[in-house]
Amino acid sequence: MRARDKAAVSALRSTLAALDNAEAAPVDEAELRGVALEQSPVGAGATEAARCELSERGVVDVVRAEAAERLEVAAQLTAPAHADRAARLRAEAAVLLRFLDGPDAA
Image (tube, rainbow, N blue to C red):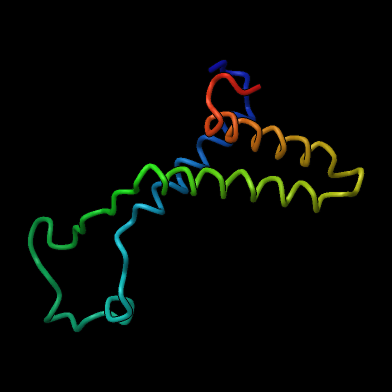
């Protein structure tokens, strides 16, 4: 990837972050409320939690959602002052969809 392809870099960075968030360990309501200090786990690794592993379908769903979100926001930016932002969002969505469609799609 060329260093000057800002749309691709931006799309890929934010999509990797979305994938990372999707793989985060689920938190139940009891953990959100917290536990008393004397009941807190102690020691090395006591607060570590296993991450979820997304299936290929899950990854595709996240990437497709990221592309759809960009296209939706671009469609809402109708004012001429936002034309550059809308174009950038469409370019980012195209980058993500190109990954889903494969190298032959253009």
